[in-house]
Length: 417
Image (cartoon, rainbow, N blue to C red; front, side, top):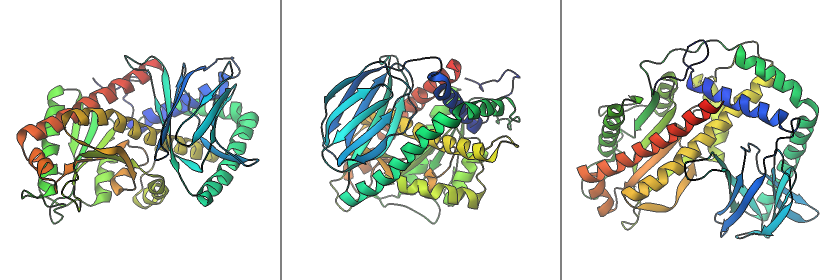
């Protein structure tokens, strides 16, 4: 597949594509109520034990709102605003959610313990799943933490509803103008989706030491080269490596390279270590809430600027930048969720395999990124698997299949806009 073209025939920068999508989302949110478009909820499911508890919501149209923690009249709730909904319903919950209730414009989950929102993931329809889905992961927290988050979220929810009622139409018109007046972005080198593969460690930084002998930096480099070869053989991708030899590359340089290459996906490959040799399996990390707090600081320090049209009103520049960062986080989580079942078919995975952390390589504000731990070099079976041609081939083919599915979905989104 080549570059996605605009009417003028120029390719979009990856962040520009993301910006166009978030503006489209804003316009949909702004005018959905005016035109009476219903986004009916078809199913709600709550599973888990509080560590975590997962809420899945099926709708017939995309929902882009955040989930808010609420504590009113002594009742703890998670509130998920809806674009619109044509009916009311209720049901029993699980894992800290006692009951849920659905009404036009809002879905509420009553809690029997203090919980907070760990992650919100939005998934489009697939070949076998025709509905849109919103996944909300909850985690049990202390009373003090819950009270603090609820106080903050209640203010945020009130402000969001007030802003939507007073100024959303005006902002939608301004944002529509931004999308039509943007300057051309730099062209990619070559054609295809730009995937950056980061072989962890290198040079003076060996990483983990394998129980069978060898070092993490060699395992990750071999995996990166093998994955590059698989992707390049496909012809659909432009593949860049942050290192292709045994050299040390600073973390900020890895992220800067990815942004300079207009990366559409960044995958950092690692191999883990544990104190117990029995621990084994792959795991995938996306940015944590604490890590998100570092993004603006590191972006400013390294001049990682999100491309927004000059002359955009300052208040809208901030909105657009925040939306790009949110979309980046969503796409990172989406790729992680696509990657996990493929990895599970290739070898063992850890329990609670999709994890959150503040790793530096996940801090780009506009590049979807994951850090993949291929396995544990302190486990004999994992080390043998990752140091064998057969084991490494299985892992890299699993990654490649997830990448294919991820970009299939991105192309469908662009085509539908």
